[in-house]
Amino acid sequence: MAKKQKAKRMWGGRFDGELDPRIDRYNQSLPYDQRLVEEDIDGSVAWARGLRRIGVLDAKELGTITKALERVRREFAQDRFEAEPGDEDIHTAVERRVVEIAGNAGAKLHTGRSRNDQVATDLHLWLKKACDEIEGAIASLQRTLVEAATAVGETAIPAYTHLQRAQPVLLAHHLLAYCEMVQRDRERFADTRKRADVMPLGCGAAVGSGFAIDRAFLAKELGFRKVSANSLDAVGSRDAALEFLSAASILAMHLSRLGEEIVLWASKEFGFLRLGDTVSTGSSLLPQKRNPDGAELARGKAGRVLGRFLGLATTLKGLPLAYNKDLQEDKEAVFEAFDTITGTLGALEATLAGSRFDADRCAEALEGGHLLSTELADYLVRKGMPFRRAHEVVGKLVQTAEQKGVDIKELDLATLQDAAPEIGPDVKRALTVSAALRAKRAVGGTAPARVKRALAAWRKRLAR
Image (cartoon, rainbow, N blue to C red; front, side, top):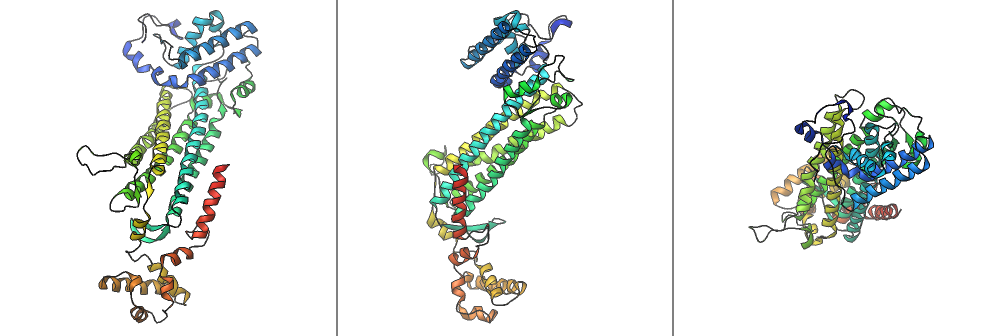
């Protein structure tokens, strides 16, 4: 709780009177940006060392400031830090406490530095860690997908287009499709990390620091790949945050699609997936219900992430250079997106790991819907018939089968030959699920041999 006393502000020298409490509350970001405390303290330690190198601090002052910063770190870690009036954000809170502990030495810490380059640096440090953590969580989901794909063996299900049964596909191939999707997401976060790996510290409020600070030294201390080239751009841009939200939005969309598949597969209408007790919930009214809440929330929460991207993009689109207070909106956006994404990854991983596929129901789904129609058309092409003609012939045979109330593979040879004399007794060998799967042996196809190699490749990739 904040103590009731006159606020001590970093910028109060040219002002008389207290800030209107309505503006004060509206201006506050400490309740959420204290999440950057580790990054803020790391940045301040590096800055103090940089000041020592150019003679602003002596060795004793550096030691005093460093010890004070580490004490503040412990206070936050142990939930003992007490906010004061005037602590607008994590940066002012940390500096205020350092001055209390270190006295005049602490009052020198902010020399040549602005909160503008400080907050941008903290955010870049946080984004790098967040990208790494999300990449790790994606890899964990991929391992679960590979384990599930391995467990189902050569179980096949219908592949769907327009949510209509299309052709047989190995369930493992279907699961590995999501490995591919989220792999691109991993690459997007790795690419985002490169943009975040540029240090704004030393750019001051807008035009650079008034002291000859060694920015290369600071970058090395903080683990940045390089320093920003333009001070106005460094403090006035939030490209890295926006790119993070863009990558998070695409990942959220992919996870939403996986969630939707789980919802469908777990329904009685599909029945492909049996939800485990530990990853499903019941109904307060309907005793028979088993609900896929984790998968449903993966769909629902995707909108939060997409909204955060659009919100920050809208905030940024009209801002002149350099820093504007509007940029304070970046942190809540990236924090919420991070929390949502990591939560969704964990929920879907748990749902898949805690459930099992029903091979019998999967096999039953292959019995209807004329799933082998394309195989018959391909058979006719191999007999010399042009594909467009084969397509028409098979389409009419589908009509005939529906009139007879059977699947196309169940039509007798005489009926097939009436439609196309090219059809011979060997057609029955072509019109099987296993033959249809084996025929898709081109790279990227669902042939069992291809899928087996894909699984081996994924295990090797994830082991690295």
